[in-house]
Length: 384
Image (cartoon, rainbow, N blue to C red):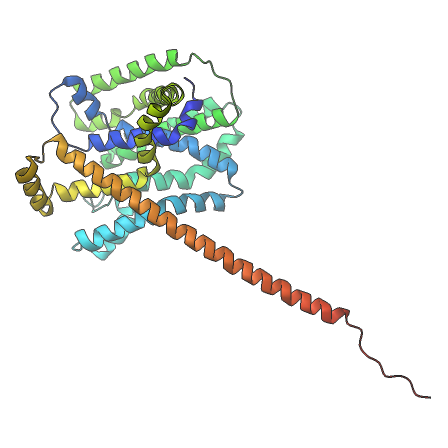
């Protein structure tokens, strides 16, 4: 089980991560303490996603011919789905929000304003964080490439994360913890991307390292959850064990996916398929799941809750209720993704046709002009 399996099964790992996040967002009570603990640390799915994103961005930077092309790829992947969901959300579900707050929320500015204005209305914290990381990636990559010892440079840059947390702790901006604590794991992912791209050698028995690291990471987060009572300190420390959990869990999952794919044949492909689908549509699923959860558990979701309770005895505290929400989120996420892909292909196809027509017209014009230039003008015979 090697780091290269993270890259090979990147989409499947993202699928596992989004499923874990969705489970974490479902406020169900679990009697089994181990299940309850795994549920409560479901936010580590975000750390897994950022680690895999960091890995992918390193490869994307190498493949992009320019910074503009890099940004274009990121924008095409994220902005259409993000803008469609956010605009519809504020247009139909939260029309009472002022136009200024709607605009600042969609742009992600309201989130980064933090507590300065008394927790302003903001749509989401994860996507604005991702936008900033994408924006800074080309600059970070330049510095990273110049570093002679990559792991030392990565460790140095990772110290930015706790420093920002300390600053935000003393300035009352704890709402930004969700972003700052995860800078470190994103940089680890970027280093892994470099490690794999440069084809560095790795011991095949590395699972013997990752398994203990996962155990240590889970032990640390268990102790933090059990013994840290101050909520501000708790949320500042809670994500740092992810530096051990996220890479190790990604490697071990990659190994399990590899074994299932290789030895279970058809059964393995069937088992991997849900993770692949959820990973492929992870962005859209995330956007829909958050919104559907808010609607379903709010006043506007009361008729649905009453119907499910009367028809199938499913209430708002049962796992079945949140399972249905998850299924609906996956269906809507997949539909939106494919719709955007269809429109994008149509635009690209028509753009190529127009470009081809313009090129053909230009070539024809140039050919006609060349013919005119090469024609010998008629001369009258001289008369004696």
